[in-house]
Length: 261
Image 1 (spheres, helix red, strand yellow):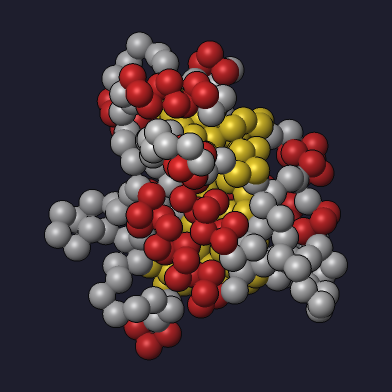
Image 2: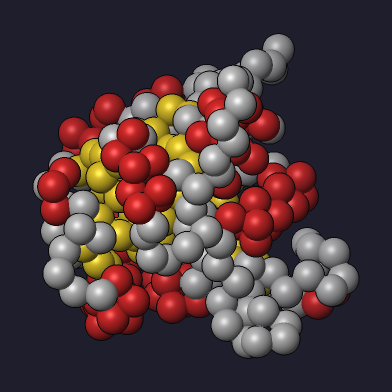
């Protein structure tokens, strides 16, 4: 994702220190450990960033010279489960960019991984690319729009310093994988698979906001165990690995410009 163009020096243009970081997370289980780690506080109703009726949740605070806003889509008002998936992720990312004006977005979350691409349970990846695998539009040019492939922000210094793994990310709105999805994921050359990343990338790209994607593997998609069972079994432990990686990423970002990453 290319940084925005501006006549004034700023962090997004790479000539000023990053000061405002937006962390977008899909699930409460993934969010709360980071809220505690960064000592973030819930925004009170009179400071609400989001429209009335939206279930989205925002925490905020200061950490090592950075103002951090952490948002997640909240619970479904009817069913009470985490509002996972591309629609909720895109909406909360859009609203947060408009209201909070971040210098950098971190989309953090758990994901499925492919052992054929070298992924193991607990591995944490920085996504080099993001694309969709379940938007099938078999019409010329519309097919490319459906895939929506995008390069993410390049962070060579971060990768070297933190020794993180790198892989391509493929996004869809289902936890399981159909044969059609499998073919599309293979075509995307993906190492990890999630339900939000490419949607966040789409919105971030639309508004020229640099974004990075930190994904921790909870389940092996091409393994022997059922995906849902393995995901639930490993969620808490892998979330701890995710939160550790995000903390290291934020520590690295502190005091740096986009071009330093």
